[in-house]
Length: 84
Image (cartoon, rainbow, N blue to C red; front, side, top):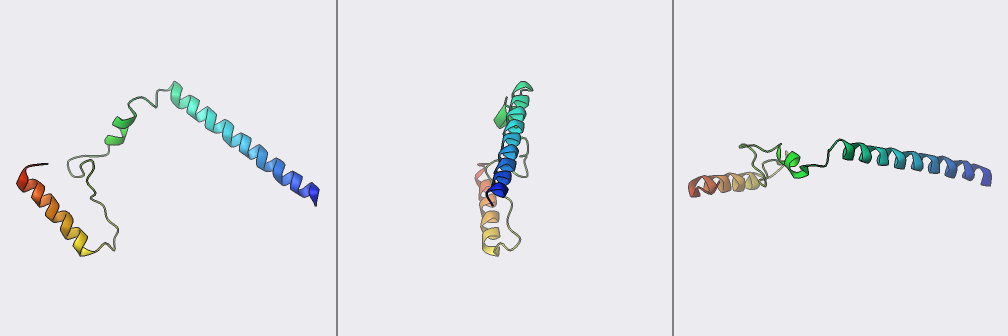
């Protein structure tokens, strides 16, 4: 019985070391290719006028009508106030 556990542990250690090696390689590749420069700018690229940063416009399909109405009221208030 001890022999089979040795094999399992050996396989797990090998896969762990392989995973660690790939992770180190990936991080070093990203650093060499300047993937970490202007990190926050890349996160803001997905926002535009229809979905501004910091405003939740997505909802779960079964969201209540109340929450949808509240969002609509808030967006109307911003338009009226001019605080876009």
